Length: 201
Length: 216
Image 1 (tube, rainbow over the protein chains, first blue to last red):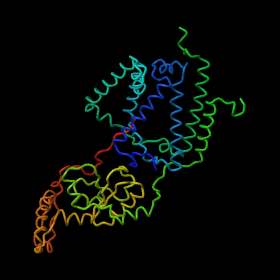
Image 2 (image 1 turned 180 degrees about the vertical axis):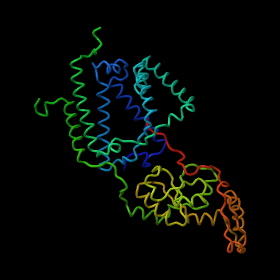
Image 3 (image 1 turned 90 degrees about the vertical axis):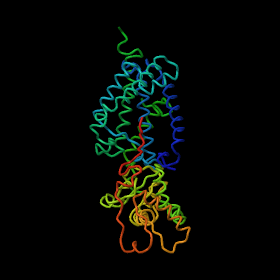
Image 4 (image 1 turned 180 degrees about the horizontal axis):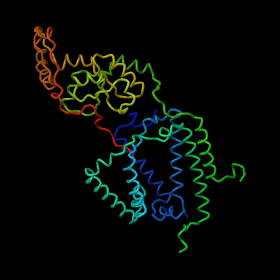
């Protein structure tokens, strides 16, 4: 049995929706349990007093990276079949900035806004309505931005391929970055305290 | 800081495990398998013996007429031959390009070349790479010409054969072919291949048609 299961035809389109549903519920559950249904918790990153989001996200990244790496080294996952979003450097930079501005204004990112809405928070529901409205506007105006949307394409980039480094070296480097990040976050949280840097005023 | 492992907090233990796994990754090698594959030769032999990997020209013609889109038809001949004539809905890909060609392992893939040899070899390569539904167009393009584009009726045909031929005429015309009656003309003159524009019920060719959008 090889993964990715869908690409190897272990299940079809219908079952893949069920699988996506189960994974989605699991994803939402752990986001909620980590406290990401609260805009205050999310925004606390920027005040450096509570870096939970940073730590949870980086933990997820290195868990997935180490898992995928070792599973494919022993031959259970065919990594070449795992979808890598193609890079369009300028449109994606602008899109990232837009998402960041939305994050700062609304206090959520798309995933956490769903969690907040599901737990009954009014700000989460309003945010989600905004997301839907944004999707609608994007869809309706797609013809106008189509060219820009597909400009500056760099193809499916990964760091090992881009830098010509061995894959294992990059895994190690990212793990080191994460461990350093965790230690730094721990130190900052202790030094600044739960209220954040702008709490004195 | 130097305490026994048991006294570490859970976070410290997890961080240590993560660090170790990251360190071993330095020596564990490349996760990409490249173009090497392992195969079960007996399993393939049984598939070949049962001939479950064949699709006849008439079946394929039927699918194209119905406008079905649940298959990918791959033409393994070179560009020039492809440009001269190809079966409607076919995509052109050389056998060396198969590894990188955007086809999914759970798609129904039909291969054809002039005869049957190249498609049989490509079938083997794809099967070895774990593609599930790979089929060979039985007899290749030669068979397609003989039974779909230019079907012929012998003068000594039985009534049943004549009935079947009447139906085939319709199919043949759909693909811009020319049904042949009598044995005289077929033997001497090779009928001209249909123009490419004519048989195009669903004019998708050359591009991957239903690429699934993925990502988060």
